Length: 576
Image 1 (cartoon, rainbow, N blue to C red):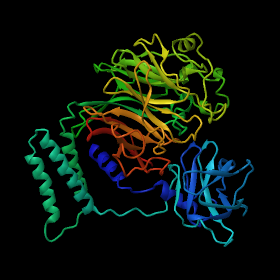
Image 2 (cartoon, rainbow, N blue to C red; image 1 turned 90 degrees about the vertical axis):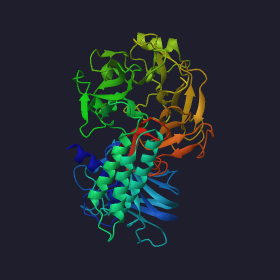
Image 3 (cartoon, one colour; image 1 turned 180 degrees about the vertical axis):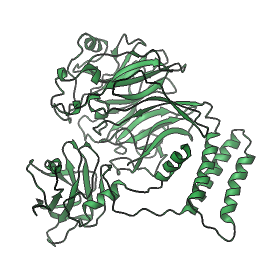
């Protein structure tokens, strides 16, 4: 069972099956039949777009809707144009009136005043699925020519209803095995440098290479690919940096609203998951043990941290209420139960003695133990105070439902976007204090090698709001906040999940997207090189583009835990 799961996971990396691009191709393939040509997942402001190949004038966009009971999902769509795929201009909002296409031969026709563009995007204004039958684009020079037909297309996500219009890619198994053996030799060299006896390891690598080089050449297939990867896996798990046998991790169903800010509000949570320990992970029979079984109600867990003595775990949890995401007035906190907000909890590592540390109608999460025993965390209890500190935090304890502070580009009563910033408290939840005076969002704090805090913050006062979730550093009491990387760098959008590399001044972080969950490409930062641009960073996973600003990747990484500059524990998944 375990071997099959691992091998299926390896095959996912080979880019088999449906991707955002292959599914999006069904939106401009010339087939109009009343069904759906593509289908995104349910998310905030989902989109589909086509690349016309060059900047050219466009006079008309024709949109064929699917013709069944869920056609109303598209009744409030938008049409956006871009010359470069980065800066977008909205040229049309649909007013909610119904339209179909195949069933009545009356698709939606959007007249455009010969605007020069290369990319045409269809996007919803709300949190829903986007699925259309066909999109056609016409210009003034050849009015009958569909400029979008069979052009490269992409979309914000795929779903269980995505099909994909390209065939399964063939794999050069021989080439892949050779690449794996090259990497395996590097692993053997590292093991030798660490002082281990690698004679048998090197023999197994070269024996496999000899089989590839044998005359006459033999056919290399999936079986050889798996054999090479199992060898690579065994070499990796021999690394002396893996001098432990258990890993604490969280299972979590991503929130229903895909946005860097909204992902941490309890009302968007979805049920499922828990806190787990992976035991004997270096063996062929690893075991997964749930330690959150005392949380019997349907809910969602967030981002645990192990105490320095490995006896306790700190985490966030909220109860999930079906239908709460659809509440039209979330600004009125009387409509939101207190336990629907994320709160910090601590329990013993065996799952016993769970205790709640925060209270009130505020989201509290990302708790991190400080070396002095206090806890730093993120909270929306910053509220509407101009000066934040001990007094502002104490008011939230006296009044559990004070109004929040909201980002200026947020939604409305149905989707309020409450600001969360750095706070700290004693181990028992006492002496709660806001330690950041910042008026906008802060994310994913961690304790650096020197005891300072690394975190990301959204610094977009008086400038464009999409990028600039840069990496910052502050003292544990909130003093001396200063930039580490990315205050003027547009890509990536977000420098989330920073962690110091053991024995190094370098930092690993997750390059994530604005309209996305915390996931993306992994980056190694050398702060000694500079604070901006490409020079200080090394892309550890160059096959994964920086989400949104470069492209929407088919796979992504998250939750990096560095062991050295070269080796890291990470999460990986493929968009499915």
